[in-house]
Image (cartoon, rainbow, N blue to C red; front, side, top):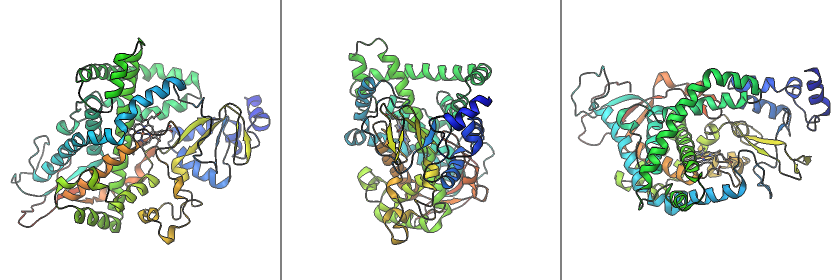
Length: 481
Ligand code: HEM
């Protein structure tokens, strides 16, 4: 142990980078803070204290100045499939994520959103048959209800990704519970952060996996089995255009005996990557807007003056909503769906980063939450100011180009455009039909969030009320859904 510490402190190629003594000597403090879900926050403090390059951790260092600069040779990046195979996989998937592909899927997106809003309006109207202990009320009143919007956003994004990937909804909106196939995915997003950090101690991780792993593996097996069955059902619908249409064609034509297995894995990846991230951003946007009444009023006014009917709220229609777009961007700055650092390995030949040569194989990382809350780059970083993305003078010094919640480079999020369309349509339709208010029990929702690889989210209770128009009968009562 002493030898390892001495090596890390004095002989390691990164030993000259500054950082807290214990963190430079050992990986343990890093892992402990990660398990306590505090690492994303610690990074901000470390970056402030050790400018311009933060603390060094074993083989890892954050990279400054060169943020997001795509390096000419990105071969050998961590978490990649072999480059040749990866490029083909990405190309096959990219049709579904192209502008045309997204346009082809618009009506299915709107169909899911109709179900989402339909459910929320049912709660307000007391026509829902699922809830026990409902107050006895007339069934046709335009009232209000208190709902956990975090949960319903998750249900919506799961149903939608099921629809766009397999042509089958998971029916979470209908049943009001997580479908058994997606439950393991929700759990995985939670526990992957813990297990990946324990990977620094393989023996301990192995022991833990023995105790808890079999249960997790069984659940993931269950998920994979159903993914495979859904994919087989999807594959016979030859004329369908969606996220997998091109990949299915290529897989069917492929001579690789493992091609189908890879497609199963990839479709699972879409369900994981495309649901929780968007649901978190939508929930965060609702919370931040409701906590900032001026911004809420402005976004609502923009939406309600742009459309006279819900049917006008289409992909093309929401493109006009500039203020709503900056609200979403400010949300992703305040609460990026992926708050942690996404590791990249310095490629062969090394690179000069921040005026210093960094050897090949070093892992460099950008910590999204820490970067976006650094006052050197964003003025008043802990405050919600959508206008900073409109170029107002007060925020002229903001380094707006640093906001990259989808990351950059050839492995950046393939779902970026789809996510924007989904979020813009959802928010516009929701705020067009409903008035929303934060309840007292969720005033401090953001403080209850815990950053692992993704966020552990608390329930967000909001009061929804069908927007009043002339002649509406507006009785109000509470339901906890
Ligand atoms: C607000 C919503 C979203 C955010 C913030 C987000 C963020 C990210 C980030 C940070 C990455 C890692 C990129 C990298 O390693 O450089 C990623 C990868 C990915 N995302 Fe998203 N994502 C979102 C929505 C979606 C959606 C809706 C889908 C699909 C339906 C999706 C599919 C993927 C896939 C497939 C990858 C892996 C890309 C690759 O390795 O080539 N994401 N996302």
